[in-house]
Amino acid sequence: MDATPPPPPSCRICAGEVTECLDLGPQPVSSGYPREPEEDSGYRFRLAVGVCSSCGMVQQLEEIPPTRMFGGSYPFRTSTSRHMEAHFRDTADRLVRGLRGQRDPFLVEIGSNDGSLLRTVAEAGIRHLGVDPSSAAASPDRPAGVRVLVDFFHEETAKAVRDEHGEADLVYSANTVSHISDLGSVMRGLDAVLGRDGLFVCEDRYLADIVRNTYFDQIYDEHFYLFSVRSVQALAERFGFTLVDAEHLGVHGGSLRYTIARRGTREVSPVIPALLAEEHALGLGDPSTYLRFGDRVRGIRDGLVGLLRELAGQGASVVGYAATAKSATVLNYCGIGPELLPFICDSTPEKQGRLSPGTLVPIRSPEAFRPYPDYALLFAWNHAEEIMAKESGFTEAGGRWITYVPEVRVTGARS
Ligand code: TYD
Ligand code: ZN
Image (cartoon, rainbow, N blue to C red; front, top):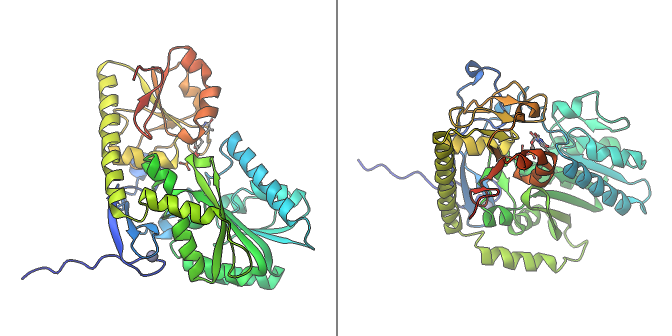
């Protein structure tokens, strides 16, 4: 009897047909850092990505149950670098300036985390509320004056916020809503809480930058959707909104800040059609773009593993720098464990003394970076400038940095 092929997966946003085009699995939960090898639950999922032929949304095909993702080990998303702190201070200043002229404005932040953005908003005396389920949000250590509802943002919580505080003039979110597979509930929540002339400002890593630079390690469990102008526009339209503006940001290797308004309330910036044309030229809606991306990722894997083996053969020492979520994808996809990388240094106290998810590479404090190794594999390439400046003694002593996106490179090496 002939087995009928399974039906193609359907889009979580628009139920259109999704074509699978990239497989980086099996992968562990990227935020699960076991203390001992025995503590690794062994849970793995297939990190597979597809593109919707109808709305263009790039999405994962397998969903991790939220109970596995946001377990007790999720308190690590605090302000990680000076650069990001400055970015969020600047963002908060701009949001505050935009609200100043209004009478008693109200700002909601989805995914307010440790309150670093809302601190500036609170200091400006602006009425606000963060909505965030994490322990960082619940922590009594969060900045004074910052108000938080410790919960997921969905339709019901949004209605409760509106009933208690009134309509929001601005809803802001950074690097959060792309994690939520049920984006429909977020959009209905937005519809419930946003005032008639309110704005939703949302920033996230930009698919075009990921594709252009082969940033395959931006793909891990939490980044369920990879946003583009086309897919965010389609999402907004579906729920009665319009994408009215987009601004390119340098953070995380390239992000877009989207501005969404209720339909018919604002002019659409000419930036939107210009970006749509660029995305089309880049082939972001075309599955073959991601098949070629996959070829480049395999090339990076072979190059990186080959380099680490060669260096091991020469007796050179190599350590990892920064146990990012991105490194979970790299290590597990490439099959790099402690035999090729004895440890990773990271400044986050909660990660130190633990093991990297899946491949169980020990994580140590940055003090373990001295005496310097011969090579350092940099997983926080988004903070490269800051880290390389901080560790200038390493290169002065002859140490070399290894980076792997957009391709495998060694600093100071002749190309
Ligand atoms: P992050 O930029 O949030 O990347 P991801 O989203 O992939 O986790 O993580 C940065 C990591 O790098 C964090 O674990 C802290 C670490 N780090 C250092 O160890 N030293 C540094 O100087 C900086 C800036 C970051
Ligand atoms: Zn779709």
